[in-house]
Length: 330
Image 1 (cartoon, one colour):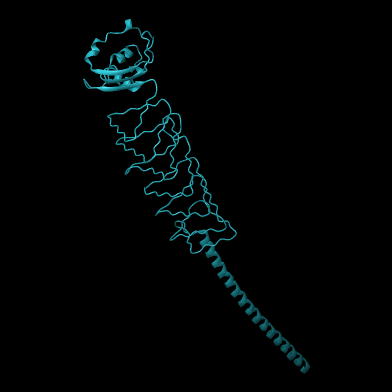
Image 2 (cartoon, helix red, strand yellow):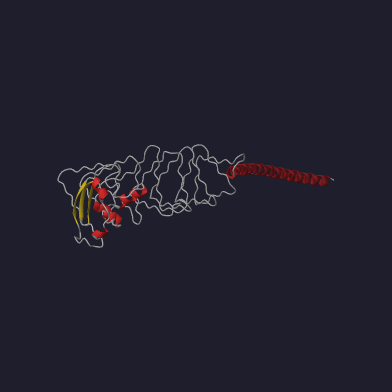
């Protein structure tokens, strides 16, 4: 910018400040206000105001400061030293690097703090890293992944008392999950202390190890909307403590060997087919025993009849002899 085009800065002289400026281009007739390096103490300077009027203030001030000033209805230079009247600030700006190193401790204590990194941000800590926040914490990656890894330790996710932990894989416009959750572990222990544990999906498939133990509470219900199929290995044992009730249209048992011990089957108000069959078998057994008795008695009566018939024949033979003798007399 040429000297002839430079605006009046008479009003700046009542704003105490001092600055050190090393311009990028020492040519006063240059078309752009190149930064170089600048350190200003106090209130804003004529260099800053000139850069603002020429539209190059973003070379000196952070973008967030410019946006916050506009939101408050002020220019970026008005509040460059602070919000309060006659506040004195520090401006450090350059078009190169800023190197800061200390062998001792470094303390930073501010009100609101805003930091923007336009490239890669890398933080290396050779000891413990502790962050304490009084309000909410939000971490968002707009285009990449978020990886959390403890190479030599545990990872703990813990919420406050009576507070939830929500894992949602993918989110659609209506809030439904659209992604998958993958879990890989040597073992898995889960303790549910609440009153409800619900899984709702189109299909659930579970493949577990060689031995599984399931312990349910006081009351358990398994519902199959259409079909329910249970396939077991070589043997199966159903051992209710009190009663086992099976209700339905058709129940069938098919196996090479079935052993039911101390099991009482009750269908509401009527006997089961197994009980009826047992009673029928007992009744048939009684009838067979009765038939056997009747047969034995019949055999005895037949023998007696044969004996009686033999007696009749003997009497007839005796009568024939007497008749013969009578004929001889006559």
